[in-house]
Image 1: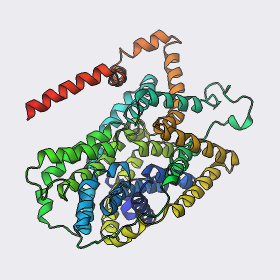
Image 2 (image 1 turned 90 degrees about the vertical axis):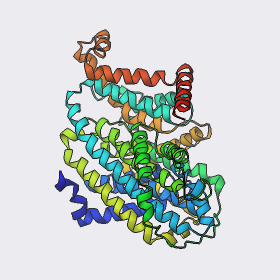
Image 3 (image 1 turned 180 degrees about the vertical axis):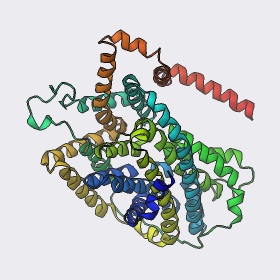
Image 4 (image 1 turned 180 degrees about the horizontal axis):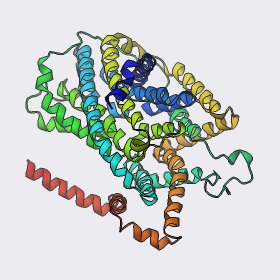
Length: 503
C-alpha cells in the first residue's frame, strides 16, 4: 500500500504531470465562469489515448488545483471563480480592499492543503472497508447503486426533482442507443449505421459542460478590471493553532457533504461559513468585514469535500459531484470499473490516486504561494480571447475520439442542449450520468431477473430479503420520499425545534 502511494512521489514523469495539472487547474479555477468540470472534461478528450495511470493522475491534479483556484478571483476581484467559492467573497474581497490580498490567499492556500489532507485521510480509512463489503454485492445491488446515483445527483442538483428525473430519463434513453450488449439487437438506431455504436459520452460531456458554458458566457464578454494590492503573504503562525478547532469541524462538514452524491463544494462552503458565524465567538474581525475565520471555514470545507466526493465514486461507482461524474466516465474509457469491484480488481490504482492527490496538495502550496502576482494578472484575460480557445479544444477533443466528424456534430448538438437546459434551470449532470449508467443499469437489471428465473416478482421480493439489497432499497425509497413536500415540511419543523433547544 505504502509503495503504491509513493509512486506519484518517485516517478518523475507522474510528478511533472501532477505539477502541470495542478497549475492548469489553478489557472482555470481563477477564471470566473469556467468550471472545474469543464477543465476535467476537456482533459478526458485529450488523454484518452494515454496510459491509464498518467491520464487519471493528471485529471486528479486538475480536479484539486481547479477547486483550490476558484477562490482566487473571489478574493481578488469579488467574482467567484466557481459556485463553491461564493462564500469566499464575503470576507475575502474585504481583505483585498484593506490591502491584505496576499494574507487572504496565504490563509486559503494553507488551509486548502489541511482540508484536502483531512478529506484524503477519510477516503483512505473508508474505502478499504467498503471495498471488502463489495464482495457480497449481487447484480440487483449494482442496479440499485446506479439507480440511487441517478436519484441522488438529480435530487441535489439545481432545479426540482421532476426536472432532474426528466433529464436523467433522457440520458438513460440516449444511453440505450446502439447494439444491445446482451442480445446484439439494434435499439433506437432507425437504420443509421453511425448509431450502431451508440452515442459517445465524451462528446456528450464536451458539449454539455464545455461548449454550453461558452454559450452561457457569451453575454459577459469583456475584460474584468481590477487594481489588486498583494501585500504580505504568510499569516501569523499563531493563527494555525487558533483556527485548529474550526478547521476540524468544517473539514468534517466538507467530508460528510462530499459523500452525499451531487451536493458538492458549493453546499459545504456555505454550510461551513454559516457554522463559523454561529460558533466563533471572537473573530479576528466581524464576519463580512474581513474575518480570517470567514476564509478558513469555506476553504477547508471545499477542499475536504473532494476526498468525501471520491469515497462514493471509487467504492460505489456513485459520483459525489459533477467532476467525479466525469472522472467515472474517464475511468470507464480506460477499462476500469469505478465502484465496488475497484478495490478488489485494481486496489493499486486506488492508492496511486490517493498519492497523486497528496502530491497535488503539495504543488498547491508551491503554486499558491509563489505565483500570486501571476494569478492577479491571469484573471484579467478577456473572455473574447478565452472562449475561442475553449471552443477549439472541444472540437479537437470530440473529433479525436474516433477521428469522426459525427462526434463533432454530437458535441455541438449537446452544447446547444446544455445551453437550453441551463437557460431554463435544468441540471445537466443527470443527463451525462444517464448516458453512462443507463446501459449498465439495463444489463444488471436483466441479469438480476435472470437469476430469479425470469420472475419480476422474484426480483422485487429479493430486494427485501438480502441485507445489502434491503439497505440499498431503503436508501432509494428514502431518496424518493425526501423530495416530497410533506417530508421537507416535517424536516424543517424538526430542524427548527432542534435549533431552538441547542440555543
